[in-house]
Length: 204
Image (cartoon, rainbow, N blue to C red; front, top):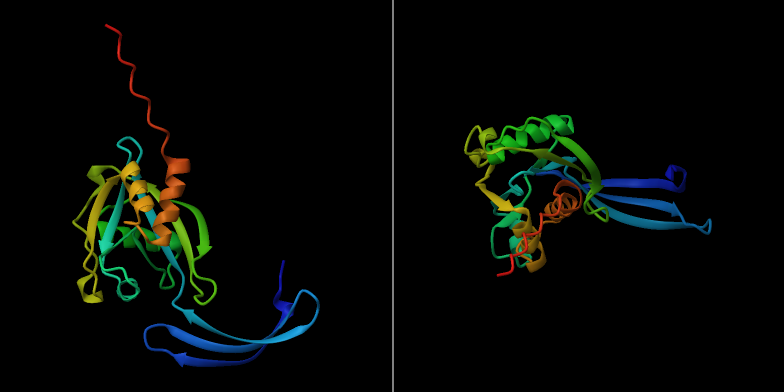
């Protein structure tokens, strides 16, 4: 359902165009009762992105990264942030971009990837739409050490965790990145079968 007819833009002002683009927009919005209300919003446009969870179903492992995120640091996270590999599309198609990004960050050259959903991550202020992928991997798929691109300020460590350990890190607050939590929950529901119960001990 389109709601374009309920929005009348009056004025758009660019507040910053340094790294990404911050705009202030004044508009009228038609409320559900039919009245028009004047509103003003700031939107931060950094482009759209993609993220991926690499998983090994036979060993029940996933690949994540650790890196410094200044916005998280200034909001009280005094540690490196644990994340699924991700990057901006930069006008590329989501699948092509995530294939290149995951190899840059982790060193893994994935064979098949599958998009499972997309989502607006902070729709109150940020325009970004993020494409979520999953891809199976094996240890032999690692073509390099990864680590990201130093010229872009990246200093990325690669982590391989069991899915149960990763989910426990979500529960404990060790993993706090939203996209990563979403992918791990998806993996727990759809990618990893419940482990087989241990055989019962024989009576003596």
